[in-house]
Image 1 (tube, rainbow, N blue to C red):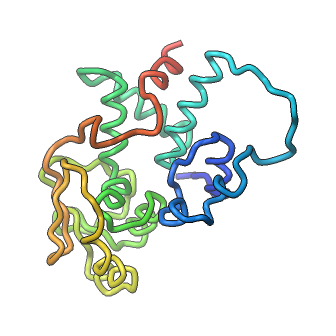
Image 2 (image 1 turned 60 degrees about the horizontal axis):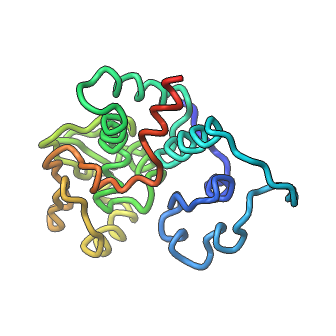
Length: 208
């Protein structure tokens, strides 16, 4: 499936908010938003008033960029959230959080969701002992996320193994640092997710 291949830091600068798309770099002085806290492109002294529709669009773009999705796939997740019982915005967030690339990131196996996507695509990640190479695969409760034989022999596995115990885990996941496996204990809560965007505003955008 197609995906955005441009500079990740450009997205944060355009939205004027740090979305932590580059892992450790986002926490360092090398962060592009820290060094250039203005939108990319030619700057203008003119200030434009943003409409309500514009604010809704910005929140939707934040959500898409955070999880590395294009419009068609994101809209499909929204339709699925509408079909489910409960609050649509919360349903949407849970669906996004349960993607394989995000769970790999949350477990500390990757520095960013983009890297988690790469690990899955390269055949390094397994679900319940079977190779899982589809980053958009939706994880279920009680699924065990681990490494394939190929992944366990990779250089990145050695680096992750040394650093994984220093990561803080959300309460809906557990980690066995000896076996290098993670277990999904429950669906994520809104407090655990700590979204950088307002899901209710995203729902308003699509509900027009």
